Length: 258
Image (cartoon, rainbow, N blue to C red; front, side):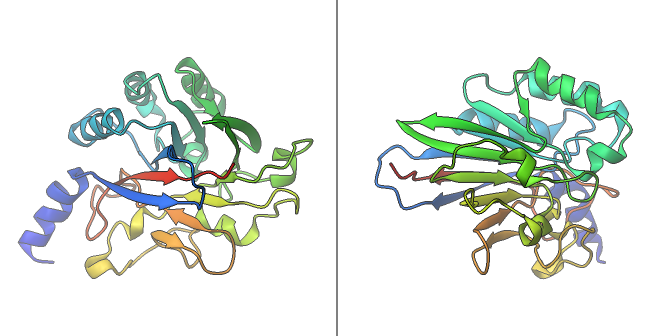
């Protein structure tokens, strides 16, 4: 690796957050549901990257924020994560799910859940809720992580009425291949993370992907199965390096059907 690439991978790209904009859905209503996906924070401290994230979140005028796992990867990061959530906007509804690192970091799922609760954030672990936007409804299901936990779509939707629009949050994208959704509750859109876009992906080619990725790396997948977007995430794991995989805040305007 050249000196310039090393400097970029260590000092520049990991600290440069971009917001990627997407449109989803075929509804004709003029006020789409604006979703922000915050994935793979791997919070250690409140630094340049986290300040960029807060600025972009506050500027995005979201209707719904979803935090799709791997928010921390070490127990001692809980105070910094608590401080970060304290600066999230209070107006949009915020939902969260767990990733594999929450299970590995020895912070305790109960303690992580209490941090979310302290900031009015619903942690969905095999749980489903219904939201309303502009007179239209959408179901949101949060599945447990497939690597560290036990995703159970049947339990998440037990007794729930079916909805035309169904957002599924699943940290690991390979969950798409084994969703096991009840037939009356098909997924309309899946939001995942976990891959970091490869984290080290020169020329966009992911060199190493963790278990739980399958064939998925980043971006849209609209082939067999429900549409899925895989975020490159925000932080880093194992090594503080990003090459060819810029940190990403995902913004999706979903045109809901009536």
